[in-house]
Length: 262
Ligand code: 4AZ
Image (cartoon, rainbow, N blue to C red):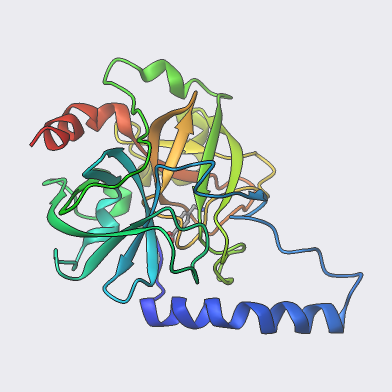
C-alpha cells in the first residue's frame, strides 16, 4: 500500500526521465537497467485488454483494476478509501500513463468490502460500477471452489504501472511479471499475524527480485488466465523473504459476483 500522495506520484513520474539520464551519465556500466514492476517486461493493454487504470478526475493513475464485465471493475478496497464516485475515473485501453487514448469512464457506484479496515487485516476488495460500458474484453475470475489455484509454486502473472523499485518512480508503460505463489506457512513466517490466510495469498521468489510495488495496488494477479488475486500490500518491494501479498479472491468471489450482478 502506498504512502505516496497522488501529487508525489505524479512528480515521481515526471522525474523518471531525468533520473534515468543522470544514472546513465554517472555510471553507465555499474547501474543495472531499471526493471519492470520490479523485474518483468513491458506490455500493452492490447495484450491485456481488461487491465484498467484507476485515476483521479485529472486522469492521473494511482491504482490498477480489472474489468470483469463491461461495467464492473475489481480493485483493492484500500485504493478506494476516501474516494467518491466523483473523484475517480477508470481508463481502459491506455498502455502509457501519459497517453490520451483509450476510453475514460465515470463511476456510478463504489462497493468497498464492508469489513475492510486496513490491508493487514484482509477484506481488501472493492467493485466499481461504471456509468458507461468499456469496449474491451473482460477477465474471468475464480469461483469460491477454485482454491487449488493457490497451490504453492503456481505461476501467477501481475500487471501494473507501479514503481520499478521500492520508493522509486512509476513506469510510464504498463508492465508485467510472473511470480510463483508461496505457501501460507512460508508467508506467515515472514509476516506473522499480519498475514491472514483466509483473505490473502503471497507470491514471489524466495530470493526476491520480482514483485509488485507502489501504484500496482488494485491490479490483477492472474493464475491460469483467471483473476485470482488483487495486489494489496507487502513490506517493501522485491526484498528476499518478503513476497507480495494479494487478496485471495476465492474468499470473496461470491460477494464480487453479487456486485457484478447488481
Ligand atoms: C503499494 O504500495 C504496494 N511488494 C503494492 C505491492 C507491494 C507493496 C506495496 C508488494 O501499492
